Amino acid sequence: MTAVDTAARARATAWRSWWADGLEAAVWLAAVTGIAFMIAGGSLAYASSAADWTYAFGRALGIVAAVLMMAQVLLASRAPWVERVLGHDRAIALHTRWGKVAIVLMLVHLTIMTTVTASYDGRSVVSQALTWPQYGWWMLAALVAGVAFLVVLVTSLTAVRLRWPYERWHAVHLLVYVGVAFAVPHQFLEGSTFRSGGVAWWFWAVLWVVSLGSFVIFRIARPLVLLEHHDVRVESVTPLPDGSTTVTMTGRYLDHLHARPGQFFLWRFLTPGLAWQHHPYSLSAAPGDRLRITVKPSGDGSRALAGLTPGTRVIADGPLGVFHHGTRTGHGLVLVAAGIGVTPVRAMLEECGPEDEVTVVIRARSRDEAPLLEEVETLAVERGAKAHRGTRASRRLVGIGGPADGRP
Image (tube, rainbow, N blue to C red; front, side, top):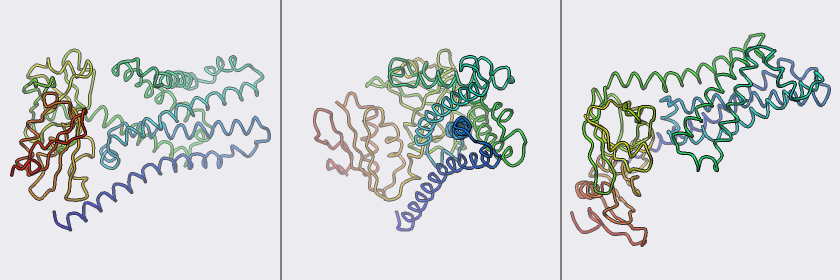
């Protein structure tokens, strides 16, 4: 790699970093702007008691929660312009972190608004909660949203998640989108900042259209378009000695996916028992006229892949992730993997050139338990990479291919 190439990669990395920070900052700027519109609408003009200020504070919390809800939906939408900047892992990490904060703020907002309004009307909190639906269907929808958020929050606690299989937890987790859908009408039809229309109304309308529109387009419509356009189907299923399974798929115009070694897809196999599940599996070989994954059985979904039959249709949603050669900043490369985590490393090694200085470290208890180890060894020799295998029982690294063990 030339100095020019290295400098270009460094600039590209800096650009992604700036845009990633900018996207996060834009979320908080939107929250501040929303509160500014609330104040400009006269919310504090007549605040004269502790109850009035508490009510205004509750509204502000609702605005921040709404912005974070929007950001949560956008981050989970798999919109390409978000994925390329943040990467799927960072996007989902932010989605999870902001989602918890948003749900807590939304529940606090609901509690404050109900409690203060009850004091204004001379009712108990329970009576006020039961009275909310009389304000209009959108307020009843807001209560449904609050219940949905509470269920998601409780089931997201570590103690609950450890006891539940992933598939059940994920199904319940989808209630957050139900909650968002039920909360939006309340904001526009009841919130005093929005009833009169104007700039504030359009500000929120644009934010919600971008957020929900991205979700509908890229989470719902795009996978169906990909299914019809590429017609990805299972070509072969191969069990490996270590217990993992390699699934090779073929289809039309797979080069149009622009997948890179190291990336992954969310795979949905349209067969009974798997059609309602999607799982992230990295490509275990460089993409071309075929796509290949290798999966270690660790749950019901991954175990079921061994029983796939050739011809099964597949929705391949992606590619996702920024772990690929395009995000490198230098010509040196160290690839470290353990267990089935070797799959993206094996794929990236396939694309390495003679000018790359590559070192591969594979950690496994034994050769028999190391998936794709022979393929990694072969590629290490072909690419001139330094490759080592480490064991859990010892920190000693053993050369397994390439110049590390004296072979050319």
